[in-house]
Image 1 (cartoon, rainbow, N blue to C red):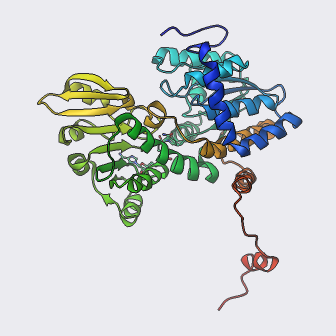
Image 2 (image 1 turned 90 degrees about the vertical axis):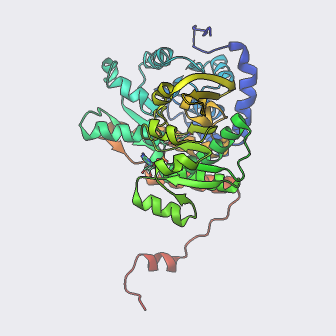
Length: 422
Ligand SMILES: NC(=O)c1ccc[n+]([C@@H]2O[C@H](COP(=O)([O-])OP(=O)(O)OC[C@H]3O[C@@H](n4cnc5c(N)ncnc54)[C@H](O)[C@@H]3O)[C@@H](O)[C@H]2O)c1
């Protein structure tokens, strides 16, 4: 693969027209972010600020990048995963003058080079997805710490990493956990991951899901969203969970709940969404039926222990795009989707625009908030201000034509009092 290096890093500048069409599609389905962009265009709240984005380079990210530039910010964008970039979208952004360094399918070395190119722009605000950008500024690029004012984090895994850094007193600037705010976590992780993961498994395999045993490892926000979509497709859903409360919820939601060892023996399709490592490993592969399909939709490609699979195999072959068939010693086969990387982005188109409208409206408004208040926040992980969450939900409900009931004065007084009882 020859990456085009100057001035930006994209796979093929000629793909720009196709990328532009996709961005237009996303815009048509992201009304809240477009409203914010229109206001940003007038008010220029981000004027002169340098903003580094490390996000999946998709059509929805393009709409966010353009909203930030409309607000006067100067964006430099790289990918948050080597297999999630939509090369045509990257080309379209580069053509319209947004600095982008992202090539789908690049190796780890090129991936980190692209992150470094974003950091070379000396960003003051970091918008991260998985904390690779923020981590780099605390490791190999500490020279840049003096430039950075704040960060914001898009995903559960990134928030976990940042909280671990903060706990040890190593996080040097304030970061807002955008992932954790309700208008992100309850929609993007749940509806976004649910739909796009099922879609990616179907695109890659064309397997009839109805009647199949679909094992979901991790019953958090993503796992719950995935389970309800799998059930809707007629799957016999099995959940594996380590937290007793979540395991109980899965059982009372109507799913089979069992240990990974037991699920391994009966599942047809396995998807991990834990944010943890080696949740499916050698001993589980050994118990699987021949032809079992395994995939990951958690942030990093560590949830399936691919090293174990490699070691147990005599050969592997990509039999159809995104499907690698591993032949195990003894004659059994296991089919790995998307190299164990986030299957919904690597083998599918990622989250639908409508749901990213919420997440990226949160990101845009948090960036505006941090541009005003970032310098007064202490280093550490902070919540999204409640007002931003409320504003985004209100705008989205308006755009969807949803009538939201209002409290009466009497009801407000009642909810704030303790004198009335039986
Ligand atoms: N694919 C996507 O587009 C996408 C979108 C959002 C989040 N994510 C990623 O998905 C992952 C999950 O996110 P979430 O918001 O659902 O997190 P969450 O914390 O809500 O849920 C994770 C669940 O996995 C469980 N778990 C941990 N280790 C386990 C193990 N060994 N076996 C079984 N269960 C285990 C936890 O107890 C928890 O209930 C994260 O890596 C997150 O960054 C991916």
